[in-house]
Length: 221
Figure 1 (cartoon, rainbow, N blue to C red):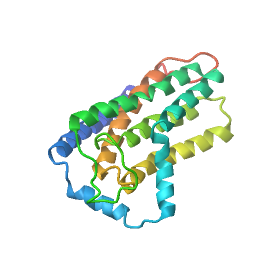
Figure 2: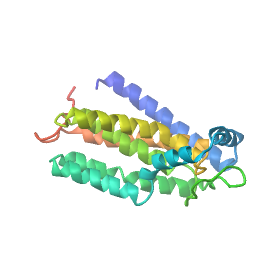
Figure 3: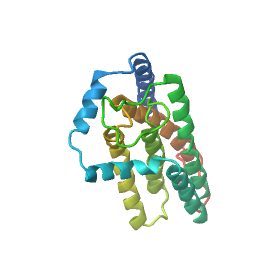
C-alpha cells in the first residue's frame, strides 16, 4: 500500500475511533435515547416464530460456548492444512471478547428493559457495545481476509465462506436489536470498535511474509 493510501486509511480509522469514543460518552451520560427505542420498535414491528428462529440462528455463533468452539475449530482446521500463521491469528480474534468486556464495564450501560421492548432471549453483562457485533466484525472480517489471501484454498470453499461471513456481519446488528438484547447505538458501537480491532489484526498478519506453504506475501513498497 502506498503512503498516500495508508495515510487516508489511518485518517479514516482515526475518525472511526473518535466516533466510537464520542458515542461511548453519549450513551454513558444518556443511557436512554429516543432513537434507540424508535429503532427497536421498528425492527420488532413484525414478529413471528420463523423470524425469531432466524434471528436467533444468526446470533448463535456469538454465544458461549459456540463462539469458542468456532474459533478453536477454525484455527485447528487451518493448522492441520499447514496454515500455521493464519491459525494463530484466528485464535487472536477471541481477544475481541476481552475488549468488549472491558469497554462494557467502563461505560456500564444497562440492557434494554422488557417494559420497553420485547426480549426474546435474556443476556448478561452490560449493553454497550454489542459484543456479538464486535466479535463478528473481527472474526468473520478476518475470515474474509484469509479467503482473499490463502491462494491454495479452493473456490468452492473460498466463495461460500466470504458470502456467509459477509451476510453474518451485516445481519448481526439487526438480530441483536430484534432479539431485544441491544439498542441501536450498542450495535453501532460494536461495529465502530470492531473495525480498528480488525485493522490491527490484519496489519500484523499482512506485515511479514508467511512461509512458502501459505500467503500472504507482504508488500514492500
